[in-house]
Amino acid sequence: MPFRHVGAPVDVRGCARTVEIYRRGDCIATFPRHTDCRLLVDQSHYDGPSDARVIAPAPLGRMARQLVLPRSWETPGVTAARPDLARYQRALEALS
Figure (cartoon, rainbow, N blue to C red):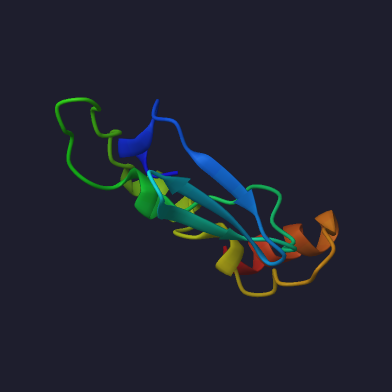
């Protein structure tokens, strides 16, 4: 979930096609279900300024930006309903 909500109570709802995270009735994050990705990461959740309660994460360096995908589940070739590690590895190799 976005870093500014760390430590706050949230509701997580598993829907048919998505997992949704809510805070105070507002949807703050949505992730797809049934992807080949084993770890879903949305890099935009780490962007933004600090506030009085939470310090913003350090920005990724140049090398890390090349390794970390902005939204892991949007990787070309990673869309099938069943996880298949070999297919996932081929998709990541195609990006490099």
